[in-house]
Image 1 (cartoon, one colour):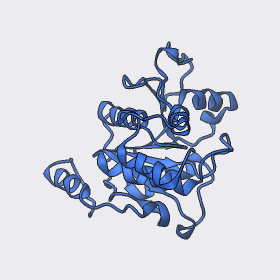
Image 2: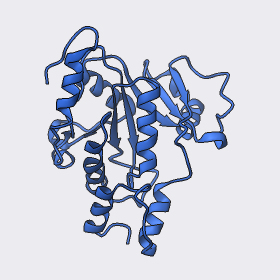
Image 3: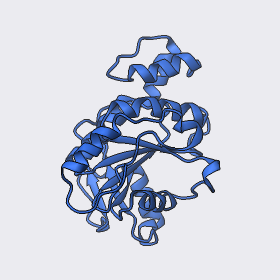
Length: 235
């Protein structure tokens, strides 16, 4: 859809309805968005990276709460192509496929897949954010990170050298090391404690599949479960 300038109104609302009807489930193979992005200079976008191995409903609930409470137009899921901290991760295409089938079920969510055919793969989180700024046509693009990543970035001094990337830090409930805040938090960082946060994890989902135990629909969407079963993942 064409971008519209000015104050969001009826045209933007109609565009949003139309966008939910146009999906590209093959985006995980060819690159690009699953749904047409909600472009425009007035947009506020958050990019949520992750391994998503598998994507579970805890991921989705946190993303939608973030979108609603912090006023984002769209949350873009972006799977990590090289999860170096998780050497046993499922091949990227299978992880991306689970994201692709789930995203169209929730307005407010989108997904973008980087592919070699579109040019060089991103080499940093800043590279991802800069590309999203170019696509969406807005400077209001935020990178969503976990509290563990925030602490690692802070220790490395990354917030002093990231050239103005804006961050939202997802806290892990009352057990978060940042639950009481951080007096040295940089001005371009926002802490967010999702009320939907719970103990659900991809590790628990994989363990249940491997044990042959039933997985509640509240844990994994049926479309994601179908990919797991069809591809024989986590056996």
